[in-house]
Length: 326
Length: 248
Ligand code: SF4
Ligand code: SF4
Ligand code: SF4
Image 1 (cartoon, each protein chain N blue to C red):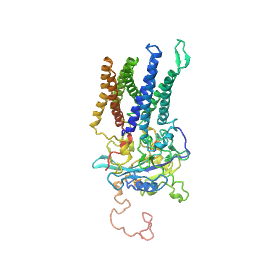
Image 2 (cartoon, helix red, strand yellow):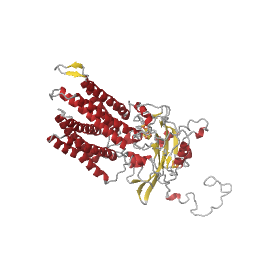
Image 3 (cartoon, rainbow over the protein chains, first blue to last red):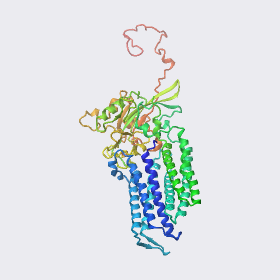
Image 4 (cartoon, protein in one colour):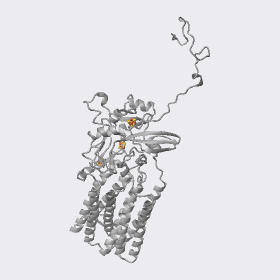
């Protein structure tokens, strides 16, 4: 498939934004369960929510560049019963709205207790909104992943690994960012976030390696024989029917040369995973936020290449029909 | 989707008859660029790197090893699948399948140009119109086949009317007595890429060899009582000839 930069930026930026939202909520939860005695300053969440909102907002903006008729984008919520794309279109503003609400109640310092549990712990409004937001963020990860995973004949995508990897990579990116942010803000949650960022980046690496391996051993279900229904062992295309260009030639083939692909795979394995893991280990050891900031930037560049490769790796069965001009 | 449709209109294309003349390609473009689905725009039509939209493409394949090869011309357009994977994924419901005749269409006024439906078609049957920013595809000439102003015999898709070889049949495959259903049933009609269970409505009739077997005794006259070639002697005027035809 041809990688579209609008979609690459959409998925990587919203991924980081959702990951950041999840990290904020996880940090608050960490304090609520009593794992850290120091209460995080409210403005940590306010500013954090704002940053996450920006990630999602720029991602959303970038998605409009994918549409030929952005002025009709409001129509795209219509098919939420059947289309994961439609569901994503609903989930994304939902996450953004909950982010605003989450940042807002922290900003206002509005913490009415909603209920008290048997262990005398309270559920207050900011935490409750946080739970809702975290749920929505995970839902959005599922929607985004399923847009690709539900295409059963694009076999490279049709796997639960697609959803898992979108979730893990987005969360990792958000956690790496929040650790750098927590360092700058001198947050008591620093160690918690650093551990989370490392664990998530390593998990994302394992998930991506699993999908790389899966793609390597994947057997295409369609062949030229099934495409035209002629059962002959020795069958080839002589002409695709035209010598000019067409949508079919543009949309479903990637522009990279065969030699470029392994290079890019190596690049993102290092930039998105190996290098950030190393930088974060150093940064954690020396308690230095700058290493996490650097890790975030390098990882983001790596994730862009990873997403490019996610498209380039996918082989669409329609390509069987478009192999030779004459 | 388990919807049932009142009818399922479709094409049945006989690969044994198609000669790859491309008449169906040009007649399709000519009709549709000026009709309901048009224009079917071209980019740089008279320049370097031309590109453009077609609803129907005729491709050529070859089977076997030279010199024992066989050429197969293969027309491909939207197959109007009974369970079309392209329809449920469309976020705006611009892509839809008509209840009354099973034709899969795009509402150009609703389409946002996200191209997601084209990803969901395993056959590459949808083509995006860059100039208009909407997805396009074969309409089975929905603006012709019901046109009461046309003579009955012309209420067929443009490609079917144009085919000089008669390789394209059009009809309702849900009616077991229709011409298309009989052809599918009796001539071994099949679907493309059955592995994805989209249940394409368009069917293809396979290549088949028509051989004439001539036995040695057919090369010499069996009704030659004199075992001698040449003009037969004139029989008696009243006598019946061997083949009941007088040679007078
Ligand atoms: S051939 Fe493709 S575009 Fe046509 S109905 Fe089937 S899946 Fe949809
Ligand atoms: S390109 Fe148009 S018809 Fe296709 S999925 Fe998007 S909105 Fe629907
Ligand atoms: S017009 Fe008929 S014979 Fe010519 S390419 Fe089309 S189907 Fe084949």
